[in-house]
Length: 119
Image (cartoon, rainbow, N blue to C red; front, side, top):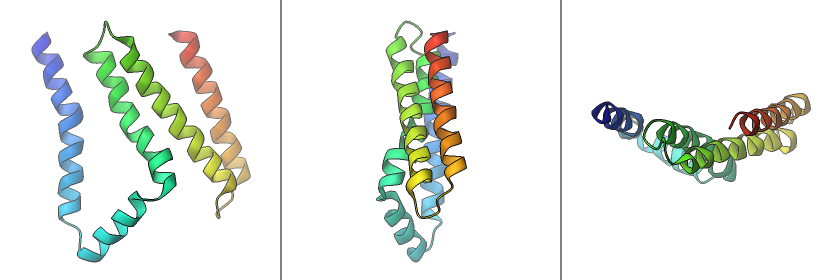
């Protein structure tokens, strides 16, 4: 059973990492500069990145750290934080979509409540 958990861990973190690396290697020089510029944006660092890292952390805590629920809580917290930042950015960004931003924030609050209720 431990072997399957370690295999899942390697697949969970290894496959996406290799896919990102492979995708970045296949980009042209201009596209690489554009990707680096977008990675430095605050919305990416505070909105998209926490959600992208929070999900594997949550799943890692669910599979490997069955006796360490703090790993799952950290992953869920990152997902919720990123979701709220993305909703706020939708409200205040240049492409303002108030209804979508309010909907995202409301879904984040409901998701937080559901997570806290079921833990």
